[in-house]
Image 1 (cartoon, one colour):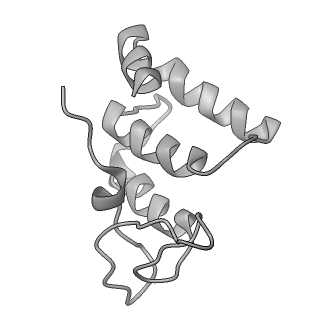
Image 2 (cartoon, rainbow, N blue to C red):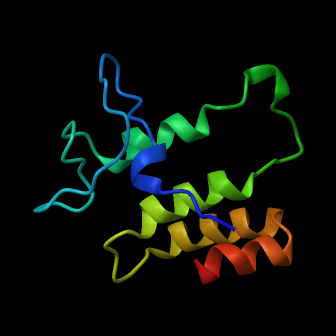
Length: 106
């Protein structure tokens, strides 16, 4: 299975920005070398993919979306704050064990 390249698939969501994909900075890994915006601005584009009417009490997570978000969160990290670890675990809990295994292996 081909894994998506997070650098090419996560567009910037900042207003007026034409950046097509996150490129980690050479000096600051969590800033994009293409547009200068942080990784959060790129991750928000992925989080806003579902229309408001489809959101409900049941959480839906697609493995590709989870992979993209986790790649951005963990890129260049040596440690993860506890609150962020809890959120990542919550994302993993929505996926099947096979999907989690594929993401962790990648």
